[in-house]
Figure 1 (cartoon, helix red, strand yellow):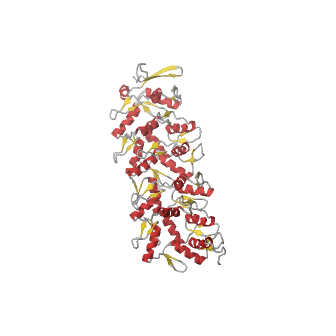
Figure 2: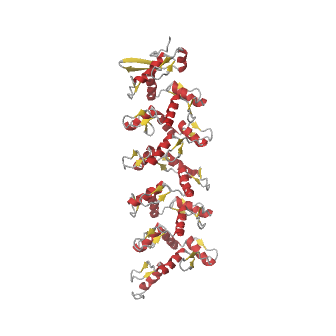
Figure 3: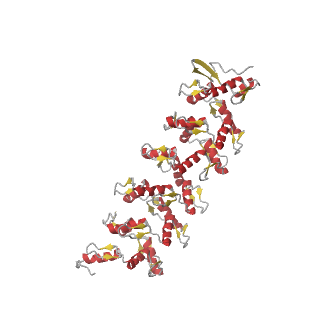
Length: 608
């Protein structure tokens, strides 16, 4: 019987010499086609697993697996193998040699086995089919690993932590977590990887190469695995289901990460601040907040970002693209996360619950900010006035008050704003859009926050209480403004006349007096106003409209501020106190009128 000679000439380029137990062993990798011609039809059977082989040489190689003997060692990294052929392929990973070329696409590979598997991508051949779910694979080994996903079998155990895995490849990858080994380094940015294949995909992020194209929508990807996951979006296929909540996922890695939300597991810890994360990519991005590293630059405006996904979302601001659309109201969004957050407005879902006060939130970021208020964590401090904030974005917005910067401009009327959210709401006013409707009285509002505040009017809820006088308010903002009456605080100063104000909007209106600017004109009498609010109140005097009614006596007023002053007559509240004679008044205007008595040389003692 003539078997394939495992030894080859030392001059053969595919021959590799390695020291095995003190002897030189030479191996020549011949093509599968050449070997099949030389094989005898006699079958050789393995006595342990009952598997059959065409040649005695293949049977000998197979039996090495049962011996668990790995006599072939790589001189570069020290890794051991049961067969010299496996060592030859492994060494090519270090040298970069890829001698086997695909005659269809021209791509090169380290072995004929990988080339054969690659060719099935072009032919579409998937001969190995799962009898449980019907999914097909290009190789039997892939099918075996897949079936273990159904049976739950995990035969490969980590001897360090005891965790089990479905394949030896997955175990090897896991062990690198313990050793910290990442032998493949990117020459461009210095990032290291466990596997060369990961490095190849990573390099494409620098070169912009995306060789895998979707035949449905034409979108391109850096790897075939990303393309395969993307295709499921078209088919609607979601094979992996969470056993706890029933949510389905396109791939197993997403399911594993999702499972940690139920268990609370956060295995990735920041060595600098001790913060934990459910996935390594989140930790990597987080570390950049400590280093200040921002690798991804916008080609339009030059702004830098900590990761590519944030850059992609940012790019859509310039392009105007909003690919994520709400099926309920048709509104479109820049990112899927914004769409999911928006959907909760329609469903009323608030999945994030505070264990301290029981308050619920529709998105996690607002929930985390809320928790910091309970523990008093105010990490971000303004260097100008010393005010502290729970997150950096609030601090940046606050700093614009000092600098006067308003980077968000309305292209219709030219008005500028501190934050983009204010601009978005403002534009709705031009469009006449009020998308949030009260289901009790039918009144519509520009934002969900205004609707929530309005609903408290129906319920009578006033959750914000003054610790000094006990007065309750609908909004925290109103409570803060009320507290300034007690403290006398006026943090907003006019740089022209040094006059101070309790709120910034009052300062803005005041500055218009110096400039003589009155942009809002009454079309009935021609009178001008510095604020639109004052114009609307003025117009009601022409129309006789008084929409604000007192719930005690039924008297009506043209605006809410007049109503609030009137209500103090019923309650007896007089929050404005004269510093000279301590007499109190129901409004600041009455107090100012009274103070003129002291300044005009009248007796300091006032009539009671």
